[in-house]
Length: 320
Image (cartoon, rainbow, N blue to C red; front, top):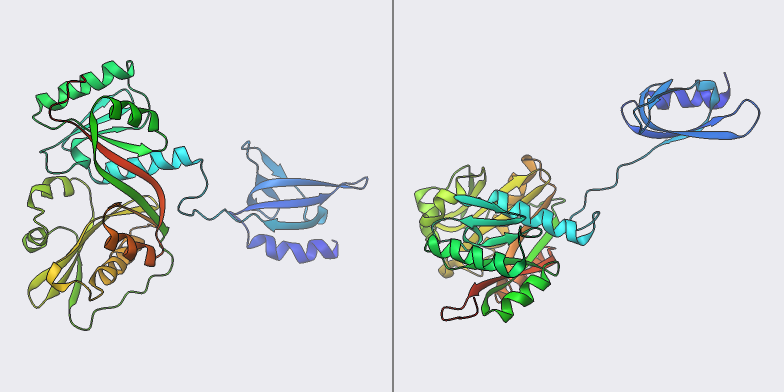
């Protein structure tokens, strides 16, 4: 056995189950490379599911192929990443009823949440654009809801321009922010207590008048953070995890207790809970006019992934 092989075998044993590339010496001189998941010190399975055998004596050099880090906002093309995040938001904040209209998702609830009471396009409608807009408008009116679109930008800017021309006004101009969770500094607060629950308590719901949203929130598993001053809940937030992503919603601090670092403390505790649920990345939505929230999230390392707008049909619009 060659010295190279003697040195390689112990290291290869530690790489079993991992993806490796191995350079093998050819009998007549030269080299050939094999790549795949190492099964043992003499075999690997390549990308075509074929078992490749080799002798330790043939090994010239090898290395483990480290997987690329799954970073927020990296990897797939922007359009696919936007759709991924919009689906994440949709799944973790599920409407009471969803009508699949081609690749438009018509979300219908009790009218208390724009996200759960709006059309989310993730592709094309089943018919021409003008007819599709007219049809979904009728559906929302039949359900006593204001016809509303949630439009991810820039991938649906054509739809956005069309609705603007038809008399749909922007209700909210918002940002979808993301960051890798990474290391979290979780600590208590010198004045207040922090707790993480699996459900929103009565007191939790009262802080931001979220009682009408309880049915929606409970339709997907989530963690509910609360900060208390004595027995009074003064700050709340929700985080839901799907795969490696988590999404934060309903983060709110009682105005009388703002400026004390409560939002950041609560956010860090929520992120820590999400990590235990398997999350490595986090996303949230924030109104572009909420300067204080944007400043907070930017200070915590969040960056804008994409923008979106809610467009509502003008009350007296005749452009139908």
